[in-house]
Image 1 (cartoon, rainbow, N blue to C red):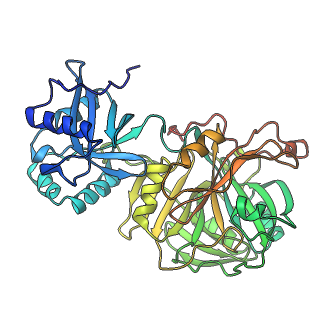
Image 2 (image 1 turned 90 degrees about the horizontal axis):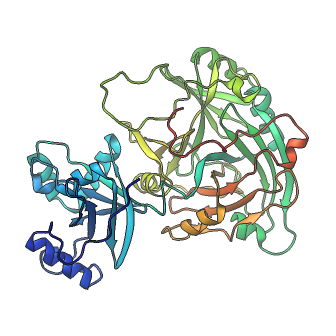
Image 3 (image 1 turned 180 degrees about the horizontal axis):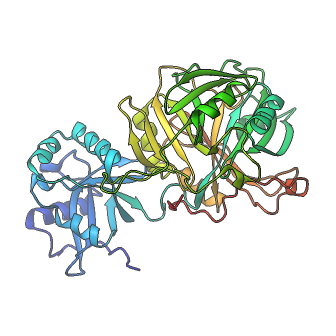
Length: 481
């Protein structure tokens, strides 16, 4: 395994005289440079020479995307990639000097829609990059420089652990997802409430006198759903309207869309809204909107443009959860979709902070991302509205399984716009005794959670054969499913 080089010294033989003066001024003034570079965001990037093996330092402009530095190998419009880019292809470990500190990083070369989005952002702040791209007879590489102490996304994250939705009637929702769709009820708990103090506000970001009942349902081979029923003095009882900020839906992949649509249309409380050749949308009286979607059975043919691959789950079947599907040919949960106030900011948070990968951007502006080994997220721009709180009908949150909750919390506390709701806490009684967890709010309006659920030793397992879809054994970077 190779290691990132130390910052090169003042006599870096690779730097031309102009760059050497910039490097020395940068280091002498904690990253501030006058003259031609005054006011321009700069970092010093030190790579390992692919032929010499020596440290090579170069001043480069950058964008921040989440906690990543993003650099652009435009080389002034030259036909060839700059030396630092070729060095990173040979050895992706490097160092970045920024604001008086040195960070070890790993280079990640972006592709497809993600690369195009980042380059467009660079043109918006530095228009000359449009000219560089026109003059260069190549696609200008766009490279993420990701801090090694961060890894990809949340430290020690394995995968999305569950999706949570606040519903008007918990019993009805559990019945629909189990009897109607073929899910398995794992446990129920509650009411969760506090007659005094502000624990509910501090830990869950709801009214202090809120009261919650909770159920966990396994839905298919890899997905857990957490369903909440809240009563609260300030509860909003109408979910966000379709297309407004806070709107969301859950999608199931099916093999035979007409048969699954017909079956779902016959279930009480399911109203068909839209049906096309590739999907059907339903309004549910008991919970979030539901989409049935059909995917081609085979991925794109060889020779198609390279891009990060979405989670497809071609090898998965609903029977892998231990129960047959409620809908004909249902395979697994395909995605969850969120409507947000600022699409670009949401994409940046999901890619830069959470470690997602942009896989598709549709003509209508919807962005698809792969989030870990078993999940896809769809993001779309919404019309103005107020995102629901966890205690509102239509409230929702997204939870990640991590190996070390405290380490993950420490990292998230440094992310701009993230607010931790207290400190990590371990449940000591009930069906989830042993679970360590923490909620946090995000600058994009979606509440989230980190947790470590010790599957295999949870008290609920003594009372049912059903089991949560586990996270142990998954790796965030695994793309085999």
